Image (tube, rainbow, N blue to C red; front, side, top):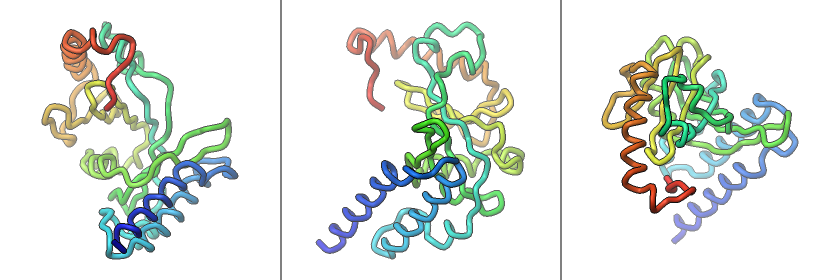
Length: 212
């Protein structure tokens, strides 16, 4: 029971960080620094009772890499895709995913959004998928400090794509994130699966989309 109460308290702290931490911050750097400090505090309070997959000391010694643009693919544009390129299928940037790194190793990520012009706030902490998959990307991308990398989420197909200089990396359908695929080849695969999804579920969804 004591551990359960502690766990609930930690989750409450994380939720508060995600929604309220950056009211007075006006830059990505400031938002990330504040999120990092709060995350260290959460991990320190959690102690050995809960395993978040990272520890406070590792986060403390980590530094901020280049912020990565996070965008969602427009499902209707994907359905009607006709070689307009990856950017032609994307909605506006929703947030930035900022890796915290030691050397070329990603320790964790912090998501920040520009809720108001010039004022960023933390949206999410400890995303293990980004943490794990960013570490599997080629060394050239990591050594480039993740500059020019883009994270794309594909709704309904529920998959994440890492795009870098015309190449994509994804675990979709059992692929390895370590193995590059041309953006165009991936888009054709995603389009075929999107059409199959629409044929199967479109009448149930109407103008809505499934929650992923």
